[in-house]
Image (cartoon, rainbow, N blue to C red; front, side, top):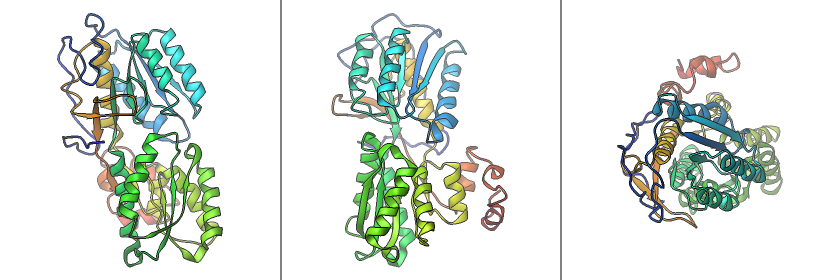
Length: 366
């Protein structure tokens, strides 16, 4: 995957909506706009993958819905559903969207490969699909996500920084990756390995079913038993939710080592403040959500994506898909004010509850 050829400020990105007109989408050359350009009365389907991770209901859904409304003078109809980590349920939800004749579908796949037939069915019904956050297989028309290999590299580099003089080939770390059904997880892992391999010893490594914190907790307990509590120098956790389960297992074993994360979830930020989690990856959701909304509205109206999507990616079943890739940032105790607070994701009051107030005061979080 190539990184986007443009810069994005954390928390805000201006993406210009394509001018009206009919054009074939690059990367989707076999199909034209299919009908005359539509007005603002479009019907948009939005399918998100799960609700265990806080981001989808707290950030992604409201941000996408807000932007669609802005772009259509509040005239668009949005049909929403969450698959609750059930790939079969999500396939049924796509069928419902087809039956309801949405004009375009924004899809964050539970299982990127399993959803391929559903994406094909949508295309056959004349519905274009914007793959959101995860690169779904099938004839998608557009894609937006973060630079996922860069996420893994950012995590790996942060872990090495945290280890300092302990970042040697003899130092043993545990890697707890995301779900194999999520293509992003493979990219996070690839990026992390590119930084960590040869610098430290990966003593145990796991791919965590459904990104479950409970599963991550069990994996960490197994790693402690296998490697030995005194022999673990640090833990690569692919996201904040799993980091919570991992840190619970570490505490129970009396271990205090650097742990990575991702998503800047409130609980993760609070653990960073408290010092039990070293870092998270801050992914500004507004630019990603805005890009998805703008591409979806353009596709529904039959207009070009040329001024919106400046990059192209390919999956196992689609090539040169118009894409927007959003950069990420390492979040540590030193830049909380300049990231999640500055961008309005959380207030200091959200983070600095009574249990964390002293630590927040020490860090100057306000």
